[in-house]
View 1 (cartoon, rainbow, N blue to C red):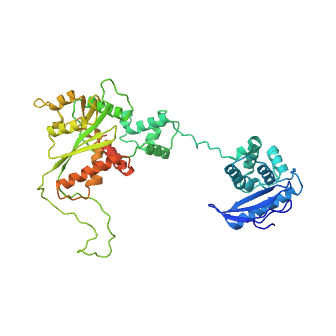
View 2: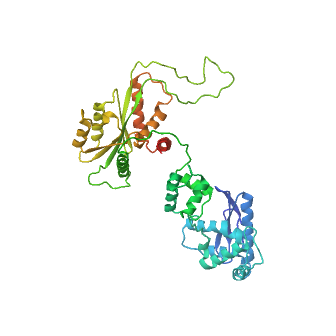
View 3: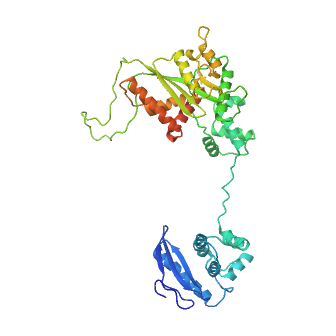
Length: 463
């Protein structure tokens, strides 16, 4: 062995082994003078310093056995073939050389390094071998050898097929979801609700799928955002134009979402408008962080904040008029003392000013009397006709169709729960600050989760 930093002396000799710490373990490196006179670096890796040195010494021993004969013969090991191939590489970048080195050290040499050329050829041609590695099966060894004979070292790179293809295509998944959301009586079945077994049997009987397990059906429905809910009561709509109003509101939502093209007279901007309130100065229940109770506690220094119990409202009430721009996903709001027709028109004029007069907009709202045009007061309809605005009303008892309703749930959950404001101005300021924060964090995961849950609950109540 030569000294540190010096090249080996004669052919077949090696310098001193050096070990280096890496992210995954240790790397042992030594300079070797081959029998052709060239000095080459031999490296091996291991989880520990001793393992890296031991692996490198075994590699040097194998090189000595092969190169002592002066040529590669039928008795040469695969490790010698690999080292000879690696030594012949030229005009490659250091990154590529290191990638090939790692591939040899981590995949080829540990599994196939001690195989001899004659045994490898015999195994690939006859399917038998005198030496069987313990880390895999003989069939796997034959496959590797056949692939190596065909593609060379390219066969050692991983070939990702993207996983198992989906068992059900998009059309089948959509049909399964549609049937799951329907009622069994709609299909002339004497059941009040679908169970997993009944739904699976019905899907197979209808030819939607060839076969589906109960657990697979449950997982598929969960991926499609379908879950098992309790049936609750609701007030049936008495609107004679229920279908027409619902269809129009859904058409406007499709235009706003970009799933449908706008017609010649259809609006391209859709607002959802509603009032939130009344907002009075009362303590709102909520939750808070507090130390864990230890012993009986100290009544003079309670560990949790208390909210006062008040039964008087001397400051009156306020109302929040809010509008949600579906295209921009922005929330707008004004806090007012009253919510009459005059205030509603003032807020609509503000929404109208957000877009040029030539852009037709739609305002979706409920059937609250200030939103309507009556015989005695037709200001709402006249203003809408004059200002290129379409007002679409949800059906009676159909406020769940208004997409601004879940936004009010988020406002109550994030801002109002657990508060006890002393003045209406303080409460209004906090609401305005929340609207500004919400418009800047519309994609916040927690906020979107609250809005989605509120929207799902409202739809489930009406379904």
